[in-house]
Structures are given as C-alpha cells and as structure tokens.
Image (cartoon, rainbow over all chains, first blue to last red):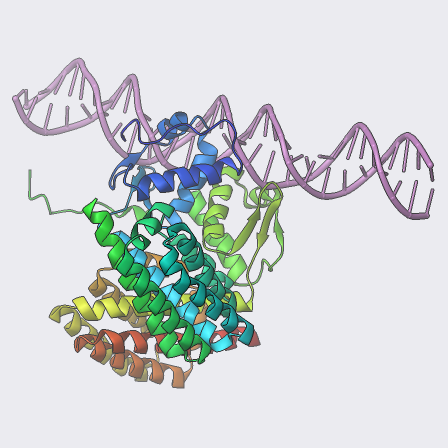
Amino acid sequence: MGSDNALLPVAPVFLKSLRDHVYGLVRDAILSGRLKSGEKLNERHLAGQLGISTTPLKEALRVLEAEGLVRSEPRRGIYVTFNAGQAEEMMLARAALESMIARQAAKRVKDEDVALMRELIVEMRAGLKTVDVLQLIALNERFHNVIHEASGCGYLRRLQGGQSIYTHAARLSVLSEERERFLAVEEHEAIANAIADRDPDLAERLMRDHVIRSGEKHLIRVSQA
Amino acid sequence: MGSDNALLPVAPVFLKSLRDHVYGLVRDAILSGRLKSGEKLNERHLAGQLGISTTPLKEALRVLEAEGLVRSEPRRGIYVTFNAGQAEEMMLARAALESMIARQAAKRVKDEDVALMRELIVEMRAGLKTVDVLQLIALNERFHNVIHEASGCGYLRRLQGGQSIYTHAARLSVLSEERERFLAVEEHEAIANAIADRDPDLAERLMRDHVIRSGEKHLIRVSQA
DNA sequence: CGTTTTAAATTGATATATCAAATTTCAGAT
DNA sequence: ATCTGAAATTTGATATATCAATTTAAAACG
C-alpha cells in the first residue's frame, strides 16, 4: 500500500473526462517521484482517495501500463515501474522516434516548411538575448512541431508524445542554463539545414544526438535534486 | 526447507485475463482488416457479441487507443484508425526502436551474448536448406531476443513489442520467399558482426535498414492481397 | 415542404455490486 | 516454537445498473 498523501482528490469541476484527468494525475505522481517505483497501487484505496469509482481508474491504469509506467500482475496487483534507468530509456525512445521523424521530414519537406524553420531559428537566436525562458520553450516546441508536420508522420508523432518525460518545470530547468540555450539554437540550426538540404541520414543523426545530449543534461539535473 | 532457488514462480504471463484476450481479438481484427478504418465500435454491441461485459472491453479499448489503433472521441464513440500509411509508420517506429536497441547492445554486449548470436547465425544458415519456415521464424525471434537481452533495455523492448504489426501469418508469408530468407541471414550476420565489434553507429544503421527493407517487403505483400 | 423545437432512444461515462483468485490469519498438530 | 492448512479477508476481475451527453425521431411551426 502506498503513502497516503501521494495523491489528492480530483477537483469537483473537471474539464476532460475523469479517466483522462486521473491518468494525468497518476502519471505526474509517478514521473515526479511522489509515487515510488515498486509501490503497489490498490485500486479501491486509490479510487476512494481520488473520490471516484474504480472504472475510470482502471482505464487510466491500463493506459499507464501500455506506456510502461506501471506493471500489472494478473489477479495480484499493479505496481509502479519507474526508475532512473527507465527515465534514460524513455529519453532514448524519444531520440529514436524523433530522429526517425526528422529523417522522414528530410524526405518530404516543402519549401514553405523550410522557410518556417528558418524564421523560428532567427527568432530563437534573437530570443537568446531577451532571456525570456518561457518564450524560448514555446519556440522550441514550435520548431519541433514544424518538423513533425513536415514529416507527415502522425502516428510516430503521437507515439513520441507518450514518451515525453518532460514537464514544463523540467524544460524550464534545462533551458534556464545559458550554455544550454546557446547549444540548443546551434543544434536546431544544424538540423534545419540538414532537412533543408534533403539529407535524411544527417538530419536523423543530428536529431538523435541533440535529443540524447539535452536529455542527458536533464537527467543529470533531476538526479541531483 | 530446500534451496530457495530450486523453483521459480510461474510467470504471470501464462494466466490470461478476459481483457487481454479481448485486446488480442480486437487488435487482430483491426490489423487483419476485418474491422475497417473509420468503423465505429459500439461498446455494448461488441461486448455482447463477445459474450462479456463492457468493463474488460473498455480497458482493452484504452490500450488500443494508447497504441494508436483506435481513436476515441469523448462522449461520442470509438473509431478504428488504421490504414496503409499507419502500417508503414508502425514499421518505421519498429525500425527506430529496434535500431536504438541494437545501438545500446553494441555498447553493453558481453562475450557470451556474441557467442550466442554466432551460434544462431550458424543455425540459420543451415536452416536455409532444411526449408522449415516455422523453425526459421523461431530462430529469427531468438536472434532478436539475444540483442534485446544484451542491450539491457527492458523499456525500449516492451515499447517495441507494441508496434509489431507482424502476425504469425505475416512472418510466415515473408520468410517463405527464398530470396528473403537468404537476405535475412546475410543482414543478421552483418548486424551480429557490428555488435561484436562494439560499433554502435554501424549496428544501429544496419538494424534500421534491415527492419525497413524487410518491412517494406511485407507491406507490399499485404497490399497486394 | 422545409426548418426549428422538442421528446425519445442510443450510448459512452461513471458508479455500484458480485465473483473468484490471492493473501492473511490463526487454530491445531507435530 | 514451527509447520500445516483451512477459514476469513482482501482485492483484482468481471458484471450490472445508473447517469448524462449525443444522436435520432417526431412534432410543431413557418
């Protein structure tokens, strides 16, 4: 049985469905470490604690199981499965998928996408001096989104979203470091050039290295906290 | 009491729940095309048709949604989402993940794993003449499993399992072609050598190309049927 | 007729009840 | 004390009931 205060009841007013809301709550609790690896999740207890029935909770737990954050032993129970090693593997999964997306983007990119990427790079470089971290994060996401759109790979994109261990706080932490901001822009520009040159192999490699390098940086940070 | 390691617990995977069974049924129905893309899945009808209640079905559908085979519109319904383009993307996802696993394997592989791979290659080459396709498939899976084990990447491995669009019938179809069997062994040997040489970049590239090439072959076959 | 309004039916979302496997408890035997 | 095993308890798995949003049908109105 888990620590009693790891999760608070859901607010009486909820926007999305209960199961989606609960999914987010439990997911964040696991990724932030409030629910620790190995901990057993009691369905009734957890549902009661959240003030809901077991039905939407069970569905949320299935999704978390499919994403690999919990492990279900039939007729026995559900256990949290998340540690430093898995966090690194999730980062590697993101690198693998994101680099495959970049590869496809380099094959199918249109001139207008290239123009959009270049605009974003210019904005990023300018943003280096404004020091507005939130805006830099937004630019970051828009840049990756342009590549996703250009790739035309909706499935890969959706799959990649599931592997994101980044919370807003985490992104903020990484990009608040000056050296990191500089490196990110340099790497983004190199990736943009590779895609613009329709060089799938290079785009793939640069994207993989970019995700792994910045990912390792993030992992080191959270392990120190 | 005797030695503690005399007997290991029965793996829980042997006990199959209704939800897992139903998941497999619906999944196969989608991948085989018996449930067509865009088709709406009525929970009550489907549950009644399967002779079960909606509870395990809903859980199965959540997993399928997490895997991207169905799309859920809140309070409206669940629709099958699978077409040729997505099948190709699933293959690309497998290529991305499998090649990342191969990369990690090349970094961490032990000599005993290398020996095991080489044994399997020899068996495969011999199997080319016995023409026992089923045994060749088994060897195929064992070879990939050795790499998975050597990589130590349990999460990536599990994630990759979800992207498998291969049914037993599909593998059988592809490997029943003589030229394909020959190519597969050649590629496997090259991959094994790259891993044995502790060459992550090469192992990654060879694995990616292998999965994509044989995957495309498979996709062409099913599109012709 | 065609359009709008409203009532009925459908159905996904959620809650509750039941079942059965797994765990725990504890009396009785050695 | 320690082991055994049956009974009680817990709990995941499944079934059924209820709720509410959506769709469909029908009625009302122009």
